[in-house]
Image (tube, rainbow, N blue to C red; front, top):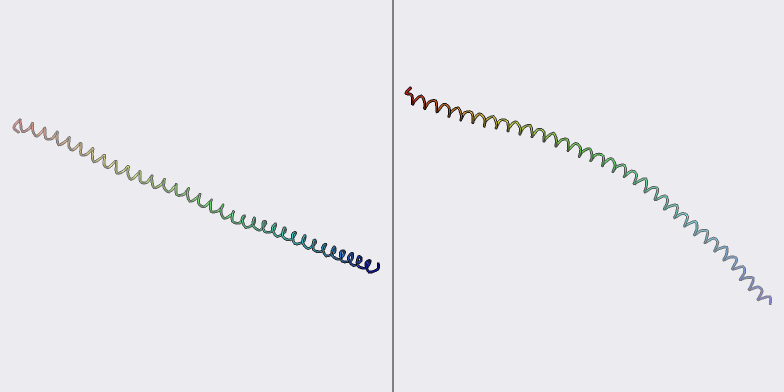
Length: 123
């Protein structure tokens, strides 16, 4: 009877020790999980900070390209205006030459008629 009682007490002591060990393991596991959660949260915050700095760079780049595009459009307008003026001068010169040529042709025709009449009159 005493031997059996001793075995029961030993089992109870082992179970109590196992319970306290198990509690320590549970506490350790919770601590590890909490540390992992904190690490994930910290990585998210750091990632947001990094992305914020990258975002600032992208915003600056976008503003720069928008300004470049605007200036390119202004430059194209200036070039087109200059080409238009140049082309207009060329067209005006051509018109002047055509009109001069027409006048000359007309004057030659008139002069030819005058010379023909003078020849017919015997002058």
